[in-house]
Image 1 (spheres, protein in one colour):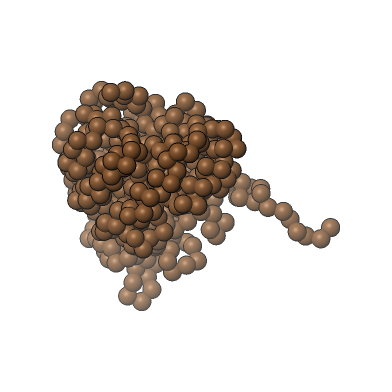
Image 2 (cartoon, protein in one colour; image 1 turned 90 degrees about the horizontal axis):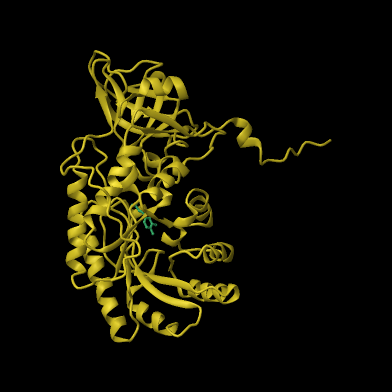
Length: 441
Ligand SMILES: *Cc1c(COP(=O)(O)O)cnc(C)c1O
């Protein structure tokens, strides 16, 4: 069997729970990322600051690659989770491919790893002709097509550019994945994918097309899914469709299982290796007999727990019965609590003596939705103290904005004993640059 993308990493990790990258280290007692103190990083780079552990990202990728090493598998990291060029580069060097959802994300891959375009899959419900052309020119591995109209558009662009387009239909397997409604995608009522019962006919309708090549079937049932069962159920349905297609004379060599494997946002020990192996088992069981290529699109699982958002306490304020801890980071820097009612552990970087208090941790943005935690028990903090919002490596900086004309944070990647600034802090001048002054002359 031709194993174009097979990649077996060196076994650098031992099974079992690996230490979290963010830990309190003695003798100083301050929170560290790897060997580096967050106090030092805050002093050097300022706050708010995103800090990522390169070691943990590499380790998580290796876990995935090892769990599927018995197959012709390719891990296509979902760029939207954290699209920092340095992180894409780190992953590309270790053999990862990429799942992109825009032309902009393709440009990011082209900027750091142009030879990785052969490992790129292009997902998303609304691709523009320009984005399709860019991806055709880059000769990406596969277009994940989400509607008949998109398939027609892809065929038209491919014909025009005289480039064969390898495609998969993103089918909607109609499985329910228990997660937040905003990030659940696998039900028939969602905007994503094509009803799996309609897919066979659609594949048949283009089977002879000169510019379209039936390459695979893809699914993605949602995000932050904690149980392996729905993934197995979705794969069952997909493999059934593969067999139907086979009987219809349309061989499908590639199954794209999507992403969505969840993590634990509530602290405590998290056995990532066990989670991945449980996930791999569910897929393997459903795909027993399938020996084509398997694509995996983890996003959050690779980067979430590798990152923290470091913020400084501006003031502690009492209003009536409530206590508010106001930080220099806000919802524009990390919107997950406001958008998904997401939980992030918040820890003082250096603990003080005293009893924890029930507080709301909030930012300075003019919105009541600007909070990181409500009615949370937090160890005592004072103005000037540093706090870390943990597990913020995925959908943190990626979803940040300039709301309230707030420059976005800097980002630092910790590799061994080195901290590398991978994105400088924005300035207000950066924010104003694209605008036109409309004052009369
Ligand atoms: C968002 C997304 C992913 C990644 O999801 P995670 O929950 O971060 O693993 C993978 N594939 C597609 C198509 C997506 O939209």
